[in-house]
Length: 378
Image 1 (tube, helix red, strand yellow):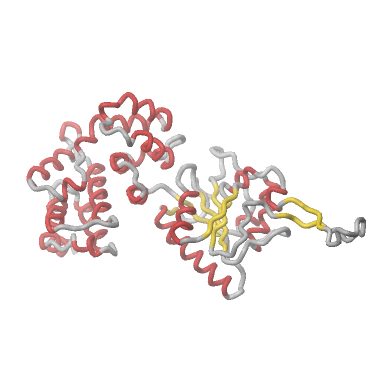
Image 2 (tube, one colour):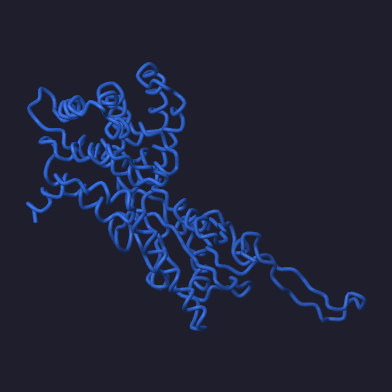
């Protein structure tokens, strides 16, 4: 097992694509009366958004969603339900025909799917509860209740090891599930964050300091929490002390230091995508980007800033609702043709635009200068 868990390491976009394939296949198996398919276990460190990704999938596809946290189960009754006595002849006391049935827990789905039952942080449960869940993973039912038709089972889990208080799942349980590992990938997170309305200044920070987002207290989840706390502050630099205190309350110290450096030294120097696309004085914008790319003393090139800049422009022109203008294509071409842009970044940007399903994105590569450059590199 890797430090993240079992299975391939995938960013959220890759994970959603693979989940879609598995779920559709499970539905086909169920429709053909060949079983119920295979549950999925998503591994990953805390704060990556595993739970939110599953919720978002159900919401996006209009599926039902049910949630259970086995780590909160105190006894088997929390899983199986509670026994109740049924008397078919209540008018005949002591007739001896009474029997016991189980009332399923409230969280158990009652209606037919499609839907997803999420067993969140499954390996936070103790071993006795895990043994009880094995039958559910195998047959989509327990002796006391059955998961309705067209429901999927997804579990999330933290990696086994010294950093987490988890219960080891044995091979018999592991082999009942398909295993995938979710990892943090800055660009995939940034695309999600843009769609979710996260402060664009915060997105710029993550793209410039991706290494600062993975720590014990600093996770994608706590970064979003922190950015929500300060999003109402129009001028971050004027409230740097307040922001520092809020950062210290939610993030690792190293992340806090990187963020304050970003606010003090870099935020004002980063052009926004709109500024580049709408620039009337192209020469001035080129100069600004060239200066931005210089390291301390001008002796080195800040490739990280340039990469973040191109990523933000790409996200802007591929966002839903974007309306292109003729000058946008010209200005993007001017940007990518700047000598300060490393060739690998330039070619990656052109490749991403040309392969994107959006016709708006593809149109950005139809500048004669870019086409000529692309042909030269083939």
